[in-house]
Amino acid sequence: MRKTFLFMDTVFNKVDLKGRVSLPADYRAIVKELGSEIVCYRSLVSPCIEGCPEDLLEKLAAEIEDSNDFFSQTQDDLTNLIFGDAKRFLFDSTGRIVLTEKLLKHACITDTAVFVGKGRKFQIWSPENWQKEEERIRAEVLKKRPVLNVRKSEGNI
Amino acid sequence: MRKTFLFMDTVFNKVDLKGRVSLPADYRAIVKELGSEIVCYRSLVSPCIEGCPEDLLEKLAAEIEDSNDFFSQTQDDLTNLIFGDAKRFLFDSTGRIVLTEKLLKHACITDTAVFVGKGRKFQIWSPENWQKEEERIRAEVLKKRPVLNVRKSEGNI
DNA sequence: TAAATTACCATGATATACCATAAATGTTAA
DNA sequence: TTAACATTTATGGTATATCATGGTAATTTA
Image (cartoon, rainbow over all chains, first blue to last red; front, side, top):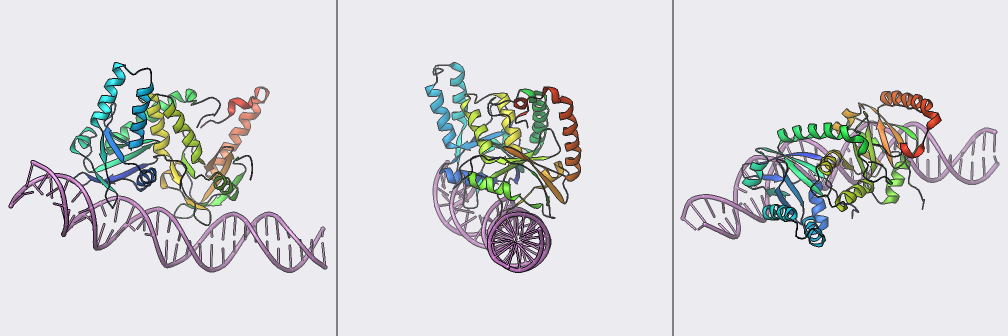
């Protein structure tokens, strides 16, 4: 039994005509060990799909509930967007899910999906968009590197 | 049971055609005692591979999650870059991992890998690049000796 | 009943686990 | 201190299991 449950790495998988695609084996292992299910929704800010175990959305809901932002219009709008869009995806015995037309279109995915680990979540991109995005991020992060201190006492990663 | 878990020393190991390489025995002992796994990723600033126990990334994910910044752009970029590049490496019964083509290429490693301890993390270099890097570091440190401050140099990526 | 969705089977490619040997290191006894 | 032995470590080779993916059957839904 593993101690940590982090989505990592970048994996290219085929998408067939029905929108069927293999979830990377590592991702499946995590979801299974968590005893959870995959939830996917359109990213609010990027042309990609976001996915995470259902647990995480549960946590998000709880946090918003507990925060003093309970009546914040912004939070309200955001949760509406996410929970209104999110959908559970069960994978079959061979480890595949079937992505919906809506999601595929939002991410401009046709025949190849790029799974990108983000720790607690992951994203699904088209190869073209992911390439652009990766370049943008690398440039951006290098520019900001000196202030990437997550927490001063722990040092950087 | 040891109290501290620090990667140290410099070790030269063979890399075979499949990218297979022995993790130094000392490193394996640490990972085992932590009950963790090795995670490797391309250094952001040097032509080398960086590695650390998965725990360290877990800590980062937890901090990001607790920061109540679910929708922050910077957090988003940072997690994409780190977790998108990082990958778990399990070692087999003889203590070897299989490095990916992407990592080997980034570090210009062909048939020999140099493991360099860095405390909580370690790096993997090609012999040629490591030689240059070591010379550079020695020169740099000598130059700055009068104002050397250990705390500042802790834990960069 | 037709269309669409979901579950199951087959296969080649790839990655992983295992075995054997060689080298290095450490230990013990003379 | 040295020599003989035992243990750990590194590395080459190979069998095995896993994974991604195309195809088809079963099931649901309209």
